Amino acid sequence: MITAQTFASIQDIDREHWNDCFPGSLEDWDYYLAVEKAGIAEFRWRYLALFEGPLLLAVAPAFITHYSLDTTMQGAGKRLTEKLQNLWPGALQVSLYCIGSPVAEQCNAGTASSVPAHQRRHLLSELLRLARRDADSFGIGLLAVKDAPIADEHWVQTCRDAGLQSMPSLPSSSLPVQFGSIEAYLGSLGKSTRKDLRRILRGPAPRIEWRHNIDDVLADIMRLYEATLARSDLQFERLGPDYFTGILQQLEERAVCVLYWVDEQLVAFNLMLLDERRLIDKFFAHDPLHTRGHNLYARSWLANVDYCIQHRIPVYEAGQAGYANKIRYGCRFEGNMLFFRHRNWLLNNLLKLVKLIIRPDRHDPAMAAAISEH
Image (cartoon, rainbow, N blue to C red; front, side):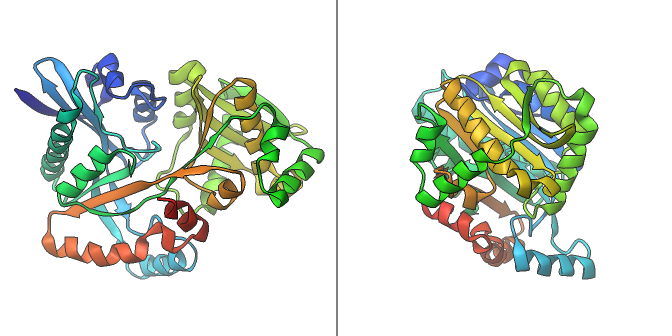
């Protein structure tokens, strides 16, 4: 007999059993524990689990927050909704129960390695029903699934069968690293991009430092983070210092922070997860006063690709932003979907109209090009 339970802490679920449901994932039990301990403001964590006796069959992370419907909008549309928010505070804010994580690349509901493939769809359906009941217990009408990968056909079809609406979400980007040198990588790019990056490599270079501890520079890290956050239209969550230090402490050798220095000033940092199979870019922040002179983003990109080449890491996972550059730099894109449904039929039908306006590909041509691959 299958029993369904929800937990407020991932520590209530056995570490090895959780990781068995997500084999090889860098965003594993330790990652979610670090996120949980970081205490990200305005988020409440939930963990959905299905058991057969003591055996864990399926799990999924979830969270509760107040969500702004214009989160994925940019440019003129974002400015318009900001004016609306000023005139009518809270007009676009809704309480949200969401399967996934605000700081994970994709939402893969996991099943144990012992679960036969033909049973997975049934267990995913049970997880969705459990999420609906848990949302109801908090009085939340809007249920969503954040960044479900299109490649996971079972998960996507389960969401559709449950009557959830869908729209494209931010695509994931990755660079297959099959080059013997940086020069070979540059040779794979378009002529203008190759010329631009070679020019950057000939210019003044910042000092680069790979770190597993950032306690002594944490104040500078947060200064750079806040400056980057202020320039972004797409940021969903606000991270505190405990997130950056906690990831490095909890994941140990599987997390690194790369620091970029000009003279004695920290001008950029890049938080990443890594193992022998992939390098995952979690967050890049920089000082815009030094961006033009030192091309910090391009410098960090080349440093990461070179690290993959030197350590024979076959995939550089580059995150969900900056699509124009990533197209130029040779990335491939994997489609993700956002699924949602409000239990109130009137509001659910209203969201059918709203989603036509808030689709992320309506406001970013480069993102639209990345999404169009799928």
